Image (cartoon, rainbow, N blue to C red):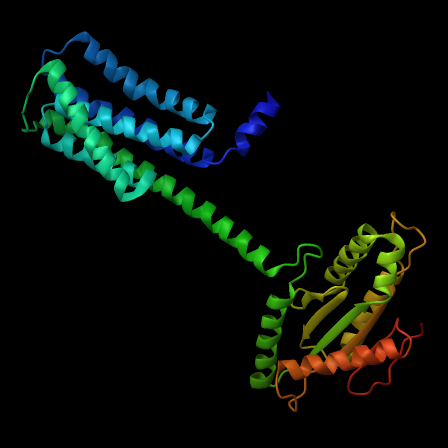
Length: 358
């Protein structure tokens, strides 16, 4: 049973089926009062009342189960919407085109058809409504009684009030769902899938904004480039799975060491980048020294003998910098010096004097 449910949940279009159920069930339920309010004053056959009860109270559940079990739930639900148009036309003719219920039904059907397939679907639905009217005329005879009595107005009130509220609720839930999907897509578009840090493109946008803020507000900030030492050798010796584990774990350590306002990203390959707002190079060095120590203490199940170290270059913001690219080049120059001096150390761009012991 659980496997069957899992296969069903994977079929596209089920969300559309679920969204359609509530408006159909409530709409037909309250719509039955409007139809019954007109038919009560007429001598109608018993089968017509049975058909009304089955259609309004059983059909929503049958339609849901049929669409849920179908290979293409979305297509099946579209067929059900067209079937609703056919029956809608049938009931409009049965009530003699009574103005108030007829206008309500036409509006509801047009709205459902638009939601199911757009303008072309509305045309198809209208043609099926005409067919339903013709079927009713053949079975019950032609009748035209557009006048609406006070009793029939009262019978239509539930549909006038409840159905729009139901549609509003469905639209609200859909807006919430779309908002969540939009947020998830935004996160995917700006996040590196392996390390869960910002990707290079989004991080560089953040760096540009930080540079402009530092320039206009005369704030301090530091920029760090981090390189995982001998990463290619790690891949060659221990395999790419171990290499991915190293990058993922370093990303975790970066997130753990930084503050909420710090901006960390994966610059590419085995390089990481961090922008630390309102932070002097010396304070940035202290923060990243803790990161370097924690990474050095890491142990990996895939390769217990593997040890990881970091080379880090730090450049503080300066008013003499022409742009964010120049700032990045300063940090890259410090990183190059850290690797040149033997790796596993931190170098500040403005002094090139600090070197932690290897």
